[in-house]
Length: 271
Image (cartoon, rainbow, N blue to C red; front, side, top):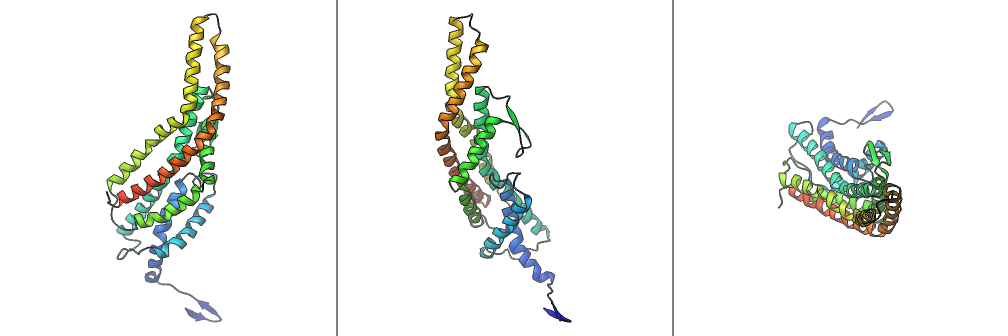
């Protein structure tokens, strides 16, 4: 600090500023990548400045307790490699959690297709395309379930624990972590089908019954009768299956966090 006239001038050298940038910069990048891809704050409706401000606040809280990377300059090739790694780690963590909502949306697509609402689509601001209305409804239910069960608190806790499971370091990420993420992505199809099974199963039985009825009474106009029956039965089954949908989403949420932590450990070379 120097006094210039009646004002105090604070000056920092590059050598003094670089350790501070390394301490807060690399954790901030991982946190921001995670918040940009996870299902709650990663929504496009959340302003970017909110995500950045929350990332800065979390980095200030978490970074002082982390071990510092020694002998690596921020502007060096190793420092840039660490920066890219933190982006990859944060995005992978966010995608691992987003699978919960993606599975619910797939369940909604399967259910809507069976009900006959596959043509009813809305513009999805999250995905940037047209999404069936039933899929959007299931996705909203999944996000609300995450919030109602304190899933956002669990995500923040897992984010802080990620720096213990996989500290910031110049060590390269190992392939088993990516394989774990790809394997976990298959949960979209399994869980999505399980969530939609009550609606799909009931409508399958209804379609078989309508087919038998058509064979027994060929003069029956199946198109005039079948669509209202399947539509009404589909709405009834959607309503009746909602109480079972929430526990499945909650269990999938816990599994996604466990898979995310396992992926981080395998990124670091642990079996």
